[in-house]
Structure formats: C-alpha cells, structure tokens
Image 1 (tube, rainbow, N blue to C red):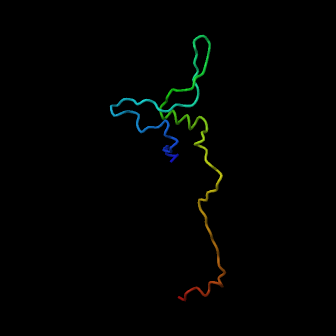
Image 2: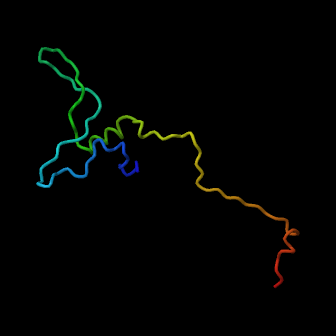
Image 3: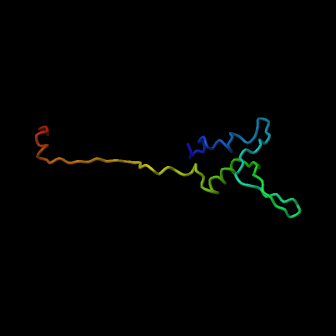
Length: 102
C-alpha cells in the first residue's frame, strides 16, 4: 500500500479532507523535522525545534524528495522470481509406444 500512500507509516501528515463540514480550513497536520532560526534582534541567533505544521502535500513532498527516509528503502536481501519455466524433451524412441494409432 506504500504506492498509494496508505501505509501505516503515512498516517502522520495525512487526513481525508482539508475542510470541515462547515467549510472551514482544518489546521495543518504535518510537522517537518528540523530546526527554525530565532534572531533576538541583537544579533544573537539560536535554533529551536520546528513545530510549524504544513499541509500534507508539502509534508510528503519534503519527505519523498528531500532525503531518503527509511520508509523508502526496500529490503534487498532476497531474490524474487517473476517467471520460471521448466522444459524437457524425451527421446522419440521412448514415446513411440505411447502414441495412439490414428
């Protein structure tokens, strides 16, 4: 279900609609990892954990195209076969007694 965006790990930053029943914009839901720069006006800069929510499109675009997250790395420790074909041939002399007369 990862291709459809409905895996359990996609619950964060996802909701079924952007508006409530009265047509009001619902609050943003996804908080991107990182920090925000805070300038106190005196040239002192500090950083605080990001707590600004963004819409689902922005959230998942950053997760998908920003860095490679663990949810996008597939386990490659196995081999998967798409198709297997087994063929064999008999010597015609073995089969001559199995053919029915016409």
